Image (cartoon, rainbow, N blue to C red; front, side, top):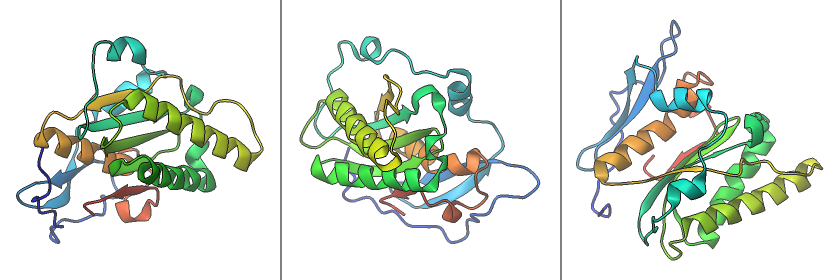
Length: 206
């Protein structure tokens, strides 16, 4: 997947504010050859419904059996708080996780394409560079953030579910869909009606 020559620009004609009458589903339009922007879709997101119905992730080890992560591959990862507790509804905790994610990416030679910290889970779109063992990286990230979180809050115990969800990006179209889904999460959840008002997300193309 060659993204070096891709052009990512913001279409100024696209409105970022959601209508006050109804909380819509927003999509981030990313076009590798064209541009970027937000558009509104009324249909509910099936993946968001899936997470609401299922409080725990599927068994990661069974799902990953026989699959080998590769260098330079892109992955979309979802990590949920233990028992879906809204640990990151506290802005200090959300800021801590966002900072640790940035530091972790640099120290482990990962390309973080985008991420969003939601009250009870995080979405993370990344590219593996040096270490193709995704499960080891996720485990390491969980351990580090659990330690930092507990130290900061004076607590103890786990903060993450044992399992996690990951999706290997198949092509450019899939990359666009995953980035769209991740960035639009706060809008879709009704946390804000303007993406610029939500502080706990980042995307390298914005």
